[in-house]
Amino acid sequence: MNKSILIPLVSLSSLTVTGLVGCERASETVKQTEAVQVKHIVPAWVGSYSGHTPCMSCSALCEDCEGMAVKLTLNADMTYTLDRQSMSGNDVSEILTGRMLFKDEDKTELELVGVAKRNLLLVNSAKHEVEIRMDQTANPYATSDEFLLSQT
Image 1 (cartoon, rainbow, N blue to C red):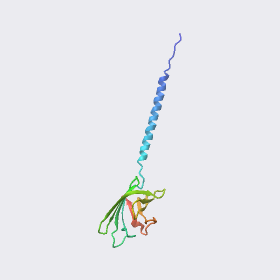
Image 2: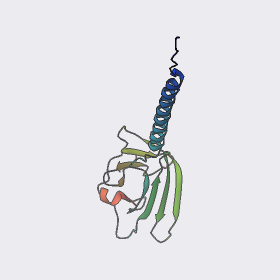
Image 3: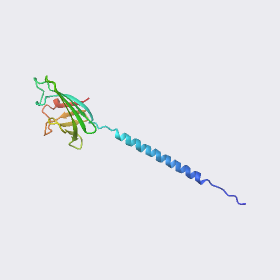
Image 4: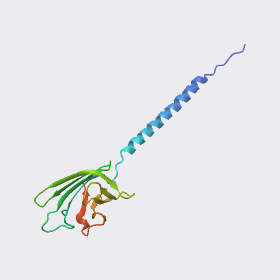
């Protein structure tokens, strides 16, 4: 009388397969979570900036001129909104929107496309400031502290 011994190999195999599938699913979940987190990283330069600058025809604040109130919003999708309001009595507001582009790899030299004057900026993410630079040359104004916009 030979007795046969049955070894349930199928059961062990199915447990192994189930275990591997479970690990695979966990790995996919981690990858999906990491991908979602990457999408929510906001560049340091994104935000709203405001300040009080000399009027468009001046290179420094004058006694006779009240200057301009400037609000600038830089968006992560490389668009901007610029609101400049004259404080010299007529209180005319100019609102411009459009695309922007960085001129350098460090993303510090910025150009507001479609803005005729004062469209070149220097972004200082560490200080949370944007400095308005001279047209065409991008050199700082002699009174560069009067051309700073602080992040709000």
